Image: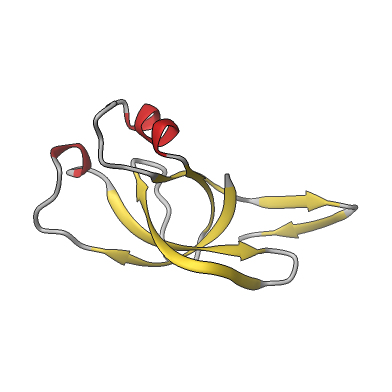
Length: 98
């Protein structure tokens, strides 16, 4: 799992039936303390969390866990948004994400 920022979204007129009601968002790993991006942009499924562009989110980047969350062992999913982050605490420092 890691923290990321939603940087955009993707629209698909045709997609796997498992993904019909899910949003496809673009996310990039984000250091909330240094306020800087890390790594590459990737697509993540939002299956009902309600995340949007600019939100700081918690990402699960492991296919088996993502498919369990989707409730479909055959879902073509690897990366899924599992939460919207409100605050991060570490080493006596707190960062509010909203």
